[in-house]
Length: 166
Image (cartoon, rainbow, N blue to C red; front, side):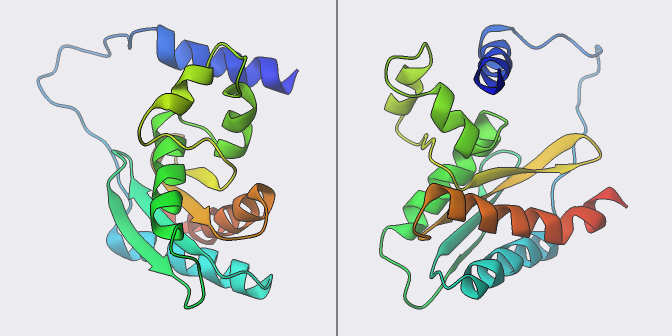
């Protein structure tokens, strides 16, 4: 059931053109401040350290541009690219990469998304929301499992949730 729901959401996001909201010449949107992005990254890093993991964490804005990257001292060389790609994937496809991994596996209708140069649907990328809008995403790489990367990213989201709602 969960896979079908995620697949339906993904299909809707990819297949349905955005409906016109109004005829204004400009749009308004919210983004995290650099201080908020840094707080989220630091909380993510701390959660992984507490669990015994050396990771890299990337926080991107709503457009997929890096706001913050932190790498723990013993994290692998690959973590900068991988954390960024997970965050980019979460923001681009508006969902946690742990769930996106399931609907984008080989043999599924969305498997081709894995061929995009930046997309990386592996656990560890989580969108950040404020008042019902996605304002950024956190990507984590370096923990021993995708589920552990996801847990650390969610700790970063939790650390700034109150700040973003008020």
